[in-house]
Every structure is written in C-alpha cells, then in structure tokens.
Image 1 (cartoon, rainbow, N blue to C red):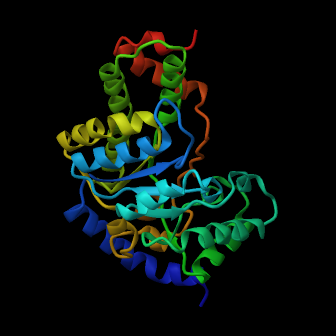
Image 2 (cartoon, rainbow, N blue to C red):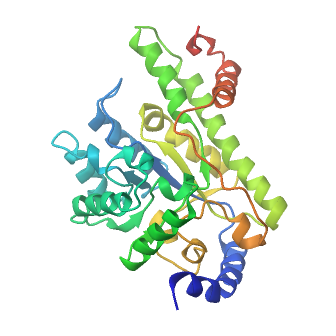
Length: 313
C-alpha cells in the first residue's frame, strides 16, 4: 500500500476525530509563525530584533512560535540568532536552503535543497524535521508535487501548514522608508494599524470557517520577522486574547496526528476546508510581494490612524 492509499484509508476516521477534537476543545486557537527570518539589520539591529521579539512574546505569555528557516541565511553573522531561537525553545522549521529553488523545473532539485537545509539544522535541539517548503503550496505540476510529497514521507519529514497570511512586510517597508529619511513616526498609532491588519485577517478566516464548518478550526498565522513584529507582537496577542483567541505552541500542533488533520491530508495542505467538508476549493497562491489590492488595504489601515505620511507619494 503506497502513501496515498494509506492516506485515503485512514483519512475519514482521523478527520472525524480531528473535527470533533477541534470543535470540542481547540476553538479559536492560533499558532504564531514567522518567515523571512535571520534577515539583515534595519532600524533595529538584527540580533536586537530577534531578542525583542522573543522577549515580547514571553511578556504576553507565549513561550513558543514557529520560525521558518531558509538556511542560505545562516552564516557567521546570524548563527548566534539561530542559536538564540533554539535555546529559547522556538520550533525551527526547514524552509529549504535557497529561495530560488521555487523557480526550478527539475524535480530532483527540491529534495536536494531540503536535504541541504536539513544538514545545517539537524544539530539544533528544537529542529525535528518539520518542513514548510514554497513549492508545496504554489506549484501547478502534480507529478513533481507527488514526487516531492513521497520523498518527504519516505525520509520522515513532518508536515506543517499556514492558514492565515498578511503582508506585514509591506507595512514594515513603509515604516523603514520613513525612519530612513530621518522623519519620525507615531509608533503607537502604527502599532494600532499593525494590530488591526492582523486581527482582521484572523477574524475573517475564523468567520469563514464558522460559516462552512460550524466551528472554529485552529489557525497558523504567518508573520514576518521584522521590526514591527518585534515592537507590536504584544499588542497583537493581547487583542486576539480579548477576542477569545488563544495562542498555542506549534510543537503541540505539528507533532500530534490526531489533532492535526494535515498529517492525513498531506504536505501540500493549505486549508481545512476541502479535507473536512469534502468540497473542492481552489488552491490559494501566496505571492511574496504585496499586490496593488494588498497595498491599498494596508494604506487604509494607516490612514485610519492618521499615518498618511507613511504612504508613498
């Protein structure tokens, strides 16, 4: 029996258990995840940014988040930051070695890239072969995707997923331009805009899930490791808590096949909807750069807080 036959055989039973478990005990749970990790210094030194982010999560009683690591960024200047994430118990996730791999056409290139990243990460205590790889979520070649999924399963990699994404990197970009030009920013107003942007994305997904499923499935919220996240993560967590959302540890989610239906639905899962409802759903494509629509929405959040000075002229 191959991987996909096993999935088909067990999916119904596990999903029934997962749906019940989620509805009964895990309503409105959110996992925090960060991408674009180990990036260069900006208005904050890179090391200071990492430490502020973890310290502020701890202030809000969140001890663990998921950090997607592209190992091309691991070097003499960033290794201390990766050590810090590991020492503070963050869940380290293999996001491949080289970003350009998403553009390759040869299927063998993807396993090589994942194995290269695995070789760099395997010495860290909080890396357990979890994978979050761009080609799993945005490609259109089912043959290459099938080969990659089988490779991951055969080599004991563990699936992760993201349900809720925001282009917070664009808001941070506007902030950096403003600060870099020597002008001031009302950081409290900017925090409100940042928090509102993220909370709207989480509550929108929650409302859609309630409408389709009748309960609130767990979300994995993908943010960027940037200055605004470091400054504002306490505000995000506090506001989500006020609205009834609880931040949970990613390790709890991604190591339990009963509470995580994505163990059965596969490495390419990006939504609960098709696997719980049985209804088809178009596979979402995540674009690395904010679209014109994304930018207009972010401009709206800034205008609401009187931050028109951050908008492009």
